Image 1 (tube, rainbow, N blue to C red):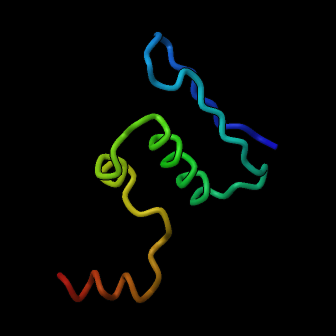
Image 2 (cartoon, rainbow, N blue to C red; image 1 turned 90 degrees about the vertical axis):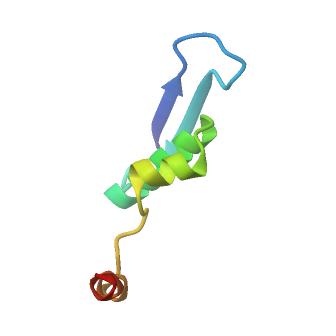
Length: 71
């Protein structure tokens, strides 16, 4: 089991330490999801997380076609 860990450098009333245990065979898309969850647990808003990370899953052929048609 691997870990993604954040320890706050200064004291605050927020979480001081967040540890996410993850499988060893985590692919890059699952890693991105875990990073988004870590950001959420640290108090970042859903809007700022979406702006910074974008979509979690790779786009399907249908989604790519919709983007092309939107222009």
